[in-house]
Length: 188
Image (cartoon, rainbow, N blue to C red; front, side):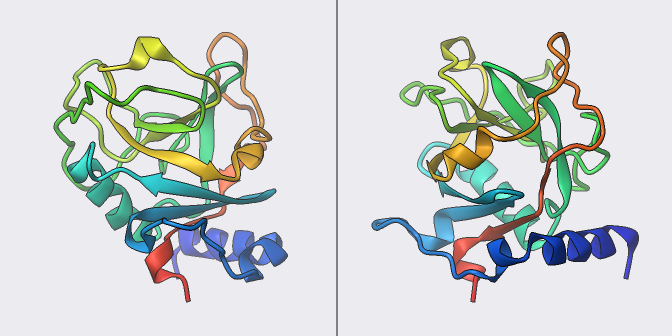
């Protein structure tokens, strides 16, 4: 077992009841396009949006099924803006071993509270594994970043993520983490 797998297993044990409970999805969700992110305070249910960003949704599901996101920290959390995660290095400079994705910007969807968007560099076609969850509506991101999902349950748990420094959003240790990330169709 590698160090990352051991850390994820330890985090799962520490989570106790949150991981032991069966997941009840809200009515109307497609389990194949629903993501369950387990945080320290509970499960966050995400409706994935393949209608907006099919390639990004496929990437998120692929990485979730590889356990890539398990035990990954929220490295940049800005009050009144968003919480960013998905970097295995934990500092905002890392990604997966998969190639970057071309942008899938939407003209119709808007960044609202609970919207999930892909993080990227200055290059619009540089999204890989990092993403963010909005605490509030951010219309200045509309048409600039790929929207791939939305929180449908558990936003109160997202609201409890530890905030970072006011100027950079960098979070000092200990950082909150995604304990486990699963595609709902895979939960038994």
